[in-house]
Length: 402
Image (cartoon, rainbow, N blue to C red; front, side, top):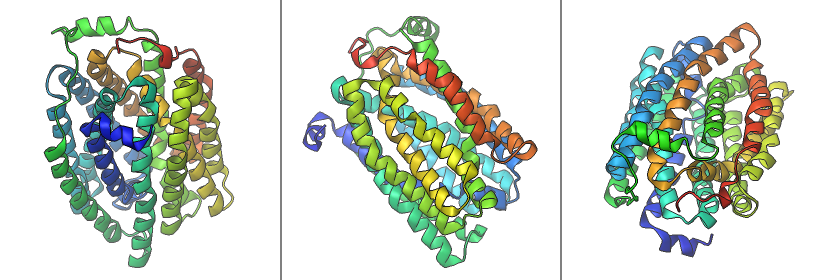
């Protein structure tokens, strides 16, 4: 999808592109160090998992409510309110003196991560025709990935210059993140227009809408795919950088390089893979890229040197290239007027699935092996999730009222 066409499609699409670009840079400054920061404030892996469990439970409730409101009220207002909450997170990390206080930004992260992502997905889906949708999503991910390539390297160099992975040094990164996110939020408020969605077929009862929703082809299988995905990644994500640092001996600069290389392979692959998804279909593209994820996890676990940690990060970024296909199939399974409640349902189930995940990941780490969560991810994904994806209808050709 040429850039010139994007300018003619929607101003809101360009606003979301810009917001994601800047937010990705801000998030990239701290994403590799947040778990390490919490551990250095006094939390152990089980406590770290417990914090994420609480966050997931709260996000499950909030996501379900937010999705329904997005369908029935102002999508713009719901989105901006959710975005405003994110500003609090880096501020609390900056002032935190004890690991228990980090429960607040962890709650905000879990609530905002899925809620904002789904609301942005709805806005983008309403701005793009189906024939270009996967490519459009992919372009959004690619441009945000561009900023994410630079920021982890910048963060790694700053921490190395300041003296390494100390709390006082990492705290500075959260302050910078807070300033950037605050300015971006104000710009988004001034530029985002109301999103007009056809609501003619909506019922005043969410239960009636859910009943209609479950008549759509493939939604039940997809909910299992989403829920299991939230569980396995929730058990792994808090520990990737902790594993690299504490088990494999990665220093601050190596962690920064890992983040940048991961984002580089992601950015380079996401647009070509998105175009592929608009040609051969969503589910085939997902299945084609999946072995890269398995190779990444296994390389991380068995890495004999720091070089292999960087290779693992590159493979993981490549597996993310299918994000455009994932986002497209998620939205295309249901009629446009139901995308809010559908997104809320997904968010609720993902939150419930994530709730025990990080705690279980911490228990696997402590009681079996630090590499056990990563092996578990591979086993569940290859034996359950991908066979379900294979059975999904191809939404590129599926008629859902668009």
